Image (spheres, one colour):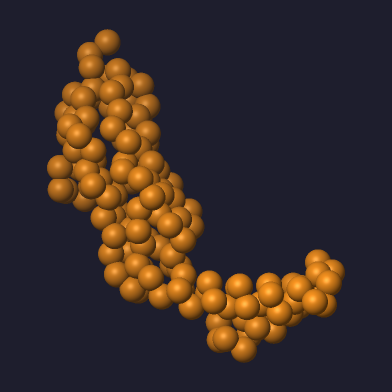
Length: 137
């Protein structure tokens, strides 16, 4: 989106929500000063991927979330090896967040899990979880 298109869309938005005309320039100035920054940054994680302890056979869920950055793609890994979605695990990614669900995990799934987020401006990596253990039932 060009700056001109963005400016025009902002004006249409101001009119559609019936902002008082005196506030149009304040809104536009705030938005345009935010857009160049957010549209040119690599993903940065908000928090560490949370370590869990789960009983074998129960679903385990890991989540990671980034600060706003455009066009983010996520990759998950266990002990430094890539994880792909399969019958055993599900990966759901939307906008600035991704989750990894291990369906019916076993002790073989114990390890360190991490998430990588990337876009055209760079790569952000979460710190790995502490060793993640699955307990026998």
